[in-house]
Length: 225
Length: 225
DNA sequence: GGACATCTTTACAAAATCTTTATAACTGCA
DNA sequence: TGCAGTTATAAAGATTTTGTAAAGATGTCC
Image 1 (cartoon, each protein chain N blue to C red):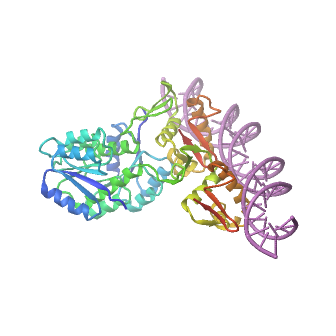
Image 2: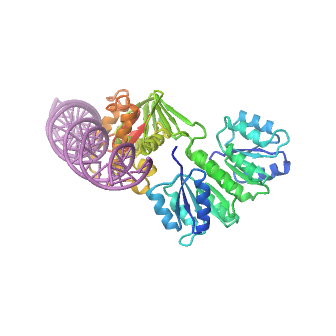
Image 3: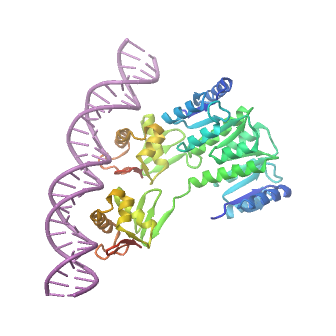
């Protein structure tokens, strides 16, 4: 199974270490940033599944980072803070924070809140299995079946297909797809998409030359049905 | 704007009153239940947009209620509890609670967490659809249906139709249409419009020679109805 | 270090779309 | 009726976008 990736943005090395140990032992992949700037860069070049953001950073205020992230990043952001005043909490939540925990936090609770947020954002809570015609996608086990036979997909192929499936029927723009799968800074790399849509079609379509599932919307993007 | 409806399940009348006052003054519609059973019935007969659930109920444990609700209810459930032990919190979150606040809670924070949860859950709701006679335009999914059958439009055709639909009934001048779709420097290319209105009519009109949707306003522009 | 899988990049063919041209049809009016 | 201005349609040409194969680059696992 593919690990969910968590980005920690915190300037205190001890906290980062503590979080890293706890998260890794719970099967998350951990990426770390010690400044807000570094965090923004890391998340843009490779979007994590969730961000743990400390509010008290040295270079930029966590509130600013939160706002900048939310201009394009729509997965969970959990705020960690020594601040326990209501104003901070309310402003963070209203600026798009998914949750807010005050330090010192209880590890078990943090992990539960992370599980809850990740589950919601992967929208695996309602239907862990998405079915579209003869295609079945198990979002929890990350297994894809075509006519009840498991098919082997690379990690990127799977991510792309899962994103399509979660937005069945909608036209997804090139920009959006690239942003979600590769990261904010890849929005112009449309050729990636062509290649990967090509390999996906070979694997899931009856006849890749006349695709029934992944439909091209010329000039705009693709649509899954 | 339509008020979001919140169901309070709590056995303490004072807490219910306090919540009711705060929620109503923030423009929510409030429904109350003093027992778990009543809460289950109310939510089933008229599902609220969000549920505030007290864990310490007299008839059934809040954990049970939560599980029963989650069998079918997938909007936010925020737990309120005097219990501040980690086990309770973790178990509630893992059973599908959206959030968990310990009593006494700060009203401003609770309201912020409610706003945040409602916003997230409304994000995934269905997209707005513009309907004009037998034509349906889903602006989010970027899909156009005629008599419930999807029709294929090119990107420019879609943009033009969407612009028409957003201004149903109004006469849109050639200049305006060209400026919006092609750009400021194309304002004199009226022939483009004739070509594209032509292809659009072929696709959406019953009888393209006698258009019912895209009406020519000679010398001025077009009108959509 | 080498085999293997995967991702990135390049090049070119194929398809779809847009632009332009030509011509026909309509409209209101003298 | 005939004319001028406007609109509609078809189709050829130009351009953009997409699909595919394959070579190079990168990373991973023994």
